[in-house]
Amino acid sequence: MTGPASAVDLIRRKRDGGALTADEINWLIAAYMRKRGAIPDEQMTAFLMAVVWRGMAEEETVALTLAMARSGKQLNLRERFPLVADKHSTGGVGDKMTLVVAPVVAACGLPVAKMAGRGLGHTGGTIDKLESIPGMRTDFTADDFTSLVERHGLALAAQSSELAPADGKLYALRDLTGTVESIPLIAASIMSKKLAVGPTDLLLDVKVGRGAFMKTEADARTLAALMVRIGRAAGIRTTATLTAMDQPLGTTVGNALEVQEAIFTLRPTKRLANNPKFWRSDLARLCLHETALLLRSSGLVETLEQGEERAREAIRSGAALAKLDEVIVAQGGYSAIIHEPYHIVAAPVGGALHTQRDGWIAGVAADEVGAIAMALGAGRARKGDPVAPDVGLRIYAKIGANFEKGQLMAAIFAHGEPDLKMAQERLLAAITWSDTPVERPPLILGEVE
Ligand code: URA
Image (cartoon, rainbow, N blue to C red; front, side, top):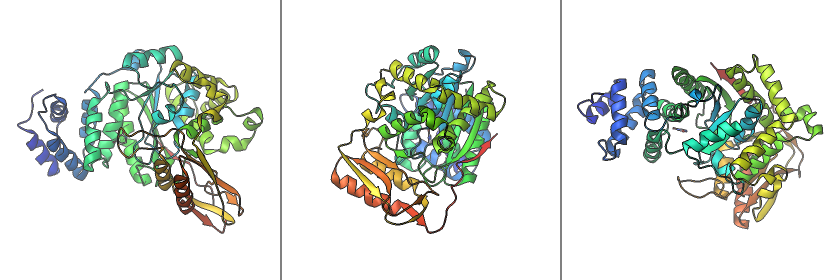
């Protein structure tokens, strides 16, 4: 690879709206990753800011993604397994879908190799949720991760620093320099990690709304379509779905609380499983939808209806719960929580919130609920900060629900009375009401092919 005259040339060209070649992008990333810093952070920051303003052509984004994916170890799982799936959510409030979908998909016969992140800001991270299970290990070497997939058909691990290290270094810089918000940079960041794992099938859940990175459906669609094209160009069968994130997903926000809710979704009683209302809950609906998309992508079923039926059966039969149990044991976790999920939430102070009026719920501001959970200690403001496993909120108020004055609307789990009071006041303000019926908003906004 021949390098350009200097990084300054490339920065100037991007600043002025020009495009870089794949060779130039490869050189830039490789030079930035060299130990003795051929490109210092100042120059990379200038380049990233130029991308934020000027954007990138699709070929440039693909080249950037590939350069980042090649910056570390590449697992190429699709060379070892005939079928192996991965899923990724762009992040939301109360988004515990990986804990539900991954065991269901694995129980349907499609192995899942999932590397997940820790939370930052108001959105939670799957790894923080998993680590609220006592003893649960999530830090595996790439080889141990692969062997978990081999033995159990499912691995839930923390993003390995051996994979796409350029993303780790660039993301830390973007976080400090106001350069996170760029569709090509987000697409390259997410997809470089996926390409480094190299599954056969990948499902992207791109969240839209006030609690998500992408605030508008148009931006979410652009990001989703770009990531689908990058994935397919790299030989991964990639599908994306756009889903709503204006109100929290499910009824819980907080690490252990979300694990509990995921377990309850995977183990409905016979009576509950026969109740159509259970299958209409947002968690169950999204789980069936995402499982069906992955099963269809992999060719294990032909239609989404068949895929949803397989998912329903995996839950009804207990096979999905058994798969979660198996992976918790394999990763050193305390698997008794499968049968006693309440064992893992023990915040010292609990409090209820009751409705103060009659009416219909018009809004539950997901971003504010995420911020409340973070203020309670469930999330982190800065990378590396600790999170509390046992705090959070259980919110029964969902958009469209009808309440009478004095009904239980939420429960809060906190480390002290001042936190409890803060959460009660802020949650009251985050919920808006209507005097007339409100329609339940759509959860699944569409697929991106
Ligand atoms: N998630 C990522 O992994 N990268 C981004 O840039 C944004 C969200």
